[in-house]
Image (tube, rainbow, N blue to C red; front, side):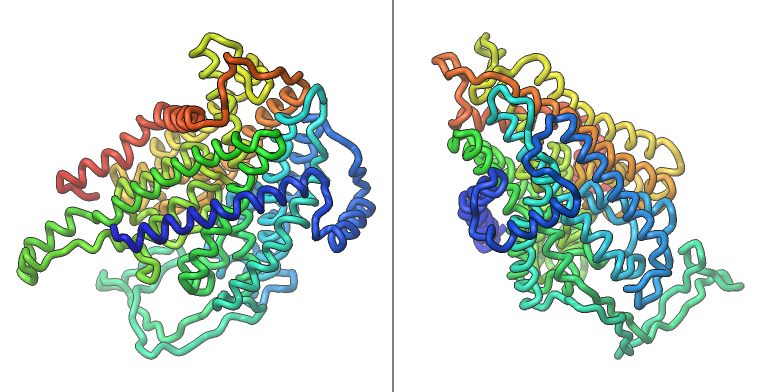
Length: 603
């Protein structure tokens, strides 16, 4: 751990803090339909869209109508993406003549991008055509992020409104989030990325001759090395390299701003065509955190309690710092087994052995601090983009991204999703505080009653139920264990991480699990759908119920939700709920792996 590393981490958090208020204020004006500097350009476009689609922008929806609109829109969009993947061979925009995507993988991918997860059980540059990437996947990057923002705003409206049955109009919120927020930010961000060397073209892939050809085992149709009559692997000489390219920058920026995470290339943000410089690395992390952080100020502004918004931001920042500190420390400490091997090596004396930390699976150009920071940022949100391989982290270093996911990604969280996820924990915190002082719990003048707590607990319980059931099935039967690259606790962690990432709609992975199998394509697809929509419905029910309540004035017995005490309570509730739910599973995975590593055992 170095001073330079800490400076980079704290500088990112400082810049996020500085943009929270201006961006959050802009979000407030956009979704409150107040005039902005973009109105002369975008307002006519908005009116045309409503006229073409028959949307009445003055119509307000109750929570059931709002939820139905979201589900119908997402369902139809998912079906269209599935069909596009299946028939891409016969469509234009496919210079490499890539085949149609297999049914199970097409279902998994359609569910993944519809739910803002972007889990990828395929190699993008050899599976998806340019048309599928731009019209199918990038489209979902936009609208799934806009839908998340719409849901967060609907929840905030439910808190701020008094004795009303409606929480807004889904179609209007979707359009305004896309046009006013995502479009201008993506345009500016894509140009910045291109200026730094991120690729943006429609050219066929280039083939170049290698200066130093090499030999590699020839693989059969099953993906395993072929053996000759003598029992030895059949070798082939590789003398050419195919350089993949395409419209990367335009997808890269919405991948980060929309907390999507699906890479144009298989190496994701570790690929130099996606993330070539230290500046692009910083910009991508900033884009991931920008909108989720801004929503805390929007919460305070729209509910009339700015201090409450900052208290929620402080809780998120504390959890963020705890995670990145642990990950950075664990990776900087390195693997003691490697240090021990070096000490006993005849090539080195004990006085010359120095640990450089755990550099396996990391880009040297980013180093330990930016790898740990990126891993924390991407799992604190529902992004899933990676610039290093989480599977190669030390047990405790890899546990940090896993715990971030298990906390329902409310540490800033996804675009919109982090805000409404955190608000569920806020309601639980207020309820617990009310029980402790023996009063009916109140939240910003609204009484929190049994219905609200039941719906909040439904959100909390659905999340671990889906994760743990699918994980248990996968580690008990051969159709699940056969895809694990590692035995022991690390193999268990790979499966646990996969389903946690899917249900949390994150999309990052422990790369040792081969997910492109019928079981994992199907089960992960359903896990993503359940993690998105089964948690949205009770959340919208809470919003609708809060909107219809009266607002009562605060009294001396009202628990304040604007100070350090509330921040500490909120952090405690988030951690305790996650710890109590997942501690047994963590004990079988990264915790056990760490203890065995300390004892000198590997897998």
